[in-house]
Image 1 (tube, helix red, strand yellow):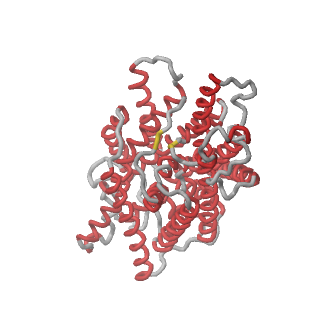
Image 2 (image 1 turned 90 degrees about the horizontal axis):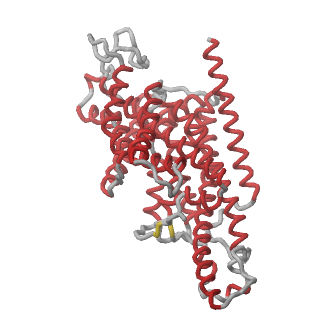
Length: 495
């Protein structure tokens, strides 16, 4: 039986929403300006607003499933009490399938039944899958989560190595303009036969050697490390928005994104799904909130602020720069044509922004890798069976860190990595799994608890049509993205 964590430390609603904001606004946001520019400003604004709304709908699904899981946990405990009472007073009419709060059973327990639809214990997404899904559903859930975490680690690895390589490689041939992107085959330093791709792979190997060993242990972020990374994140995004806004005011629009370009929609979809992702970590963030009475309203406010923040970041970036890198921070890399005229505060700011992914993602990489390692064990190892030490302590840590680094070695295209991760595994975790969880949770709680108890954390989108809509939306988007990827593949081969 899974172990459910009782919440000991609690914090205010505003603190919890800040944590949710910080979790959502991360690496995905850094890829938004480039894909927003390609898809067009009108399409980009519309799609960001639509995907923010649908993501919020599925967040409410997860919240309702969390409350239902807590109710089931309470029901199981009371069933144990019920069976203990029946030892002295046998009753052949009772069974485990009898609703706990039927009229005859309510008198046996003094606690009000609505108290069981609470979020008093942290029930993780995998534990909810174990409660509400059959074996096939549980396997699919872990496969989707593992694929998503693999994509996460590949994106982290590529972003860190690419940031370091772009800062370190300062040589720019005279025949390449300042606004042009240097190819991977360009020399890193003048007079050395060492290309930018070579530097990228060297930094990737160093990154693996420095942070890979952490996956063999159990490490946790400290409170002060979280505070530091949160401060750096807010500082970096604020500087980028202020810098782009100042550039627009001083120099006027340098970029001219189209109103609509359907060819860029799949990449924007994948980046948006990845950018609004928080569903897999909601139990850990929401459960410790002390006052959950207005949780849905506050989450709606959070998502509205995040959508506005993304629009501000993407719009200022798309119009302020004539060319955008896949990773927005690389548009601030120092050493351009006007580097000699830069003051030291401006140069220091550029270095900070360019190296921002290195600081923040390096602290997250071990945590995500350990999460992936544990989920791989849950997927492939049978509970209760003894396995050799090398399998548990060596094989699975290596399986967690080596494949994503190999993927990052093969490509430096963060747009593709984010698009694939968000469009497939991300869409499953953000859309299909919450819809399946809330559907199964409603059926299960109706069976064991009955209809007379109201779930105070029920989603405002409680009609079955919303669940069907979310699933159909996810399937349609995945199909469209797949068709676009296939078209791009054949088109590139044809040309």
